[in-house]
Length: 171
Image (cartoon, rainbow, N blue to C red; front, side, top):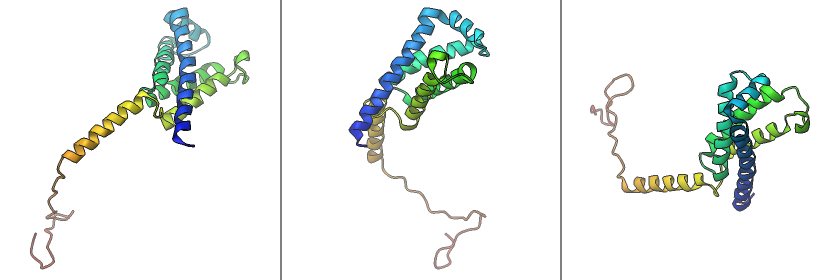
């Protein structure tokens, strides 16, 4: 796949997944509130419903926003993978596939897309690419300006014995 198609595809995946996550996170925060989300999680049998609700809101709203703009993509994607793994395990495990029946298809699709973004990154059309590219250019510039270190030759072997040159003189 050429790099243009790859980068456009990654942008599309980030935009779609990010938009869905932001919508779900916003719903949890704005419509239900933290307490409503905690109560809903508790009713579904999610352990530690309060911290789980806060994590889900942060992962979906914050992680989704970061995926949309392509910033800290591996971290955001990993948070989303963890959120979707929890949603699958505590809520959708043992259900039918289809989301209309309470199934796991949406959780699996979002989790798989986030896992792929974790593995391959955000692509060139992202803030990650801008910042990482600038960081790499700065490092390369510093490496070109810095003289190479002169490392002295070893005088002893790993056993502490003095080394000798070809003539037999102790180094």
